[in-house]
Image 1 (cartoon, rainbow, N blue to C red):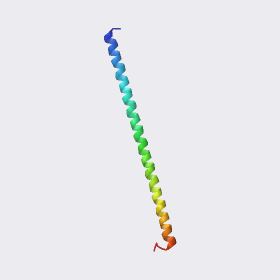
Image 2: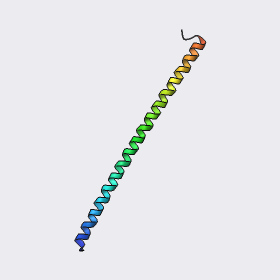
Image 3: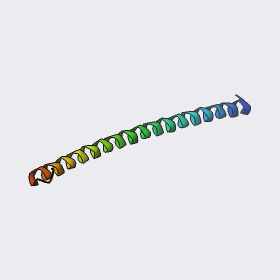
Length: 69
């Protein structure tokens, strides 16, 4: 195999490796984005539940003290 073919093959291998690495980075980024969105949704749901519980507690106090007329 002459040096020109060896250079060509090395270039092909480098291009394939670069493509593979870019694919892995994009996949990792997509997975991280998905995980972040899932965490954001979970936090939002938890916040809504806490808000509803706090409102229920406030209403219970108002009812118990007669302030909810």
